[in-house]
Picture 1 (spheres, rainbow, N blue to C red):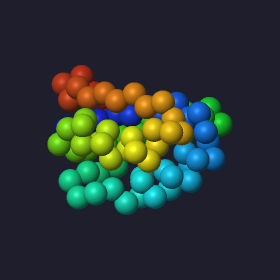
Picture 2: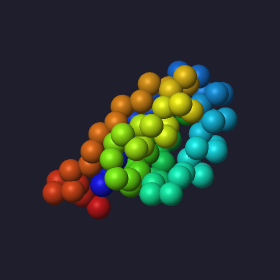
Picture 3: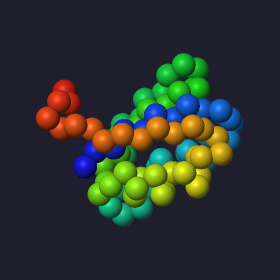
Picture 4: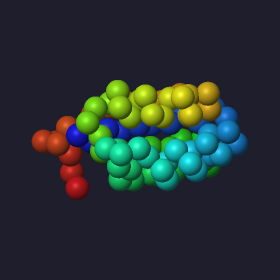
Length: 82
């Protein structure tokens, strides 16, 4: 399944320091498909492929939770475009 995360970045220095490792070296069974950075690095949206939202949340929150407010959602494959 595809999971989209919106990171509202509250501590840019900490977020980007930690994200450089987290986003480039995911565990087996997870794949990062896209990272979109907007609003002067204060907002980041990512699309992951994994077995569940919990799998992605359990991986990202310990590293990025202190530096961002994260909103997770499932991509609806019947309505997605692209």
